[in-house]
Length: 184
Image (cartoon, rainbow, N blue to C red; front, side, top):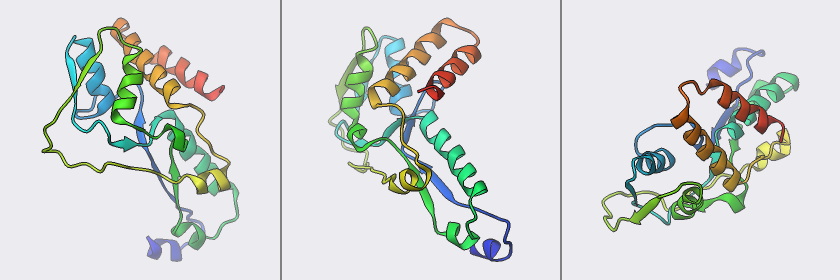
């Protein structure tokens, strides 16, 4: 990357990363929220393999907005490419919303009837017990801050999956969620 940056005064690059994102439409395998929704929609019991693992959970719209704000910042500021070459920007929730897996499931389950979960005592999976992000740079340079608390992020996510069960076309509902988020 440095060779590219040193050869052009017009290229501006920064790296960005996000915490654990949640949101409607994610049906990836072995992900907490999609697994929970899939189990509960089929009246099954969810198994938690690492209930005390703490993650920086956030709605997917949070980092997307952060990425857009970062792009605008880079474009509008007279920064030398070398100044951006070593910069990375983190986008994550407020520290108070870094919750463990079981706490997230307890909140999410409050939005679902017949939601059940159990804790596995099988320790064959090794996972970090704590993941955390410092978003200080994003807050300081971009004035970026998350808009949603974790309970609201989980409610919005839950609502999307419930609506998806009823509708064939989620486009309008999804646009409505995005617009509501942007108006916070």
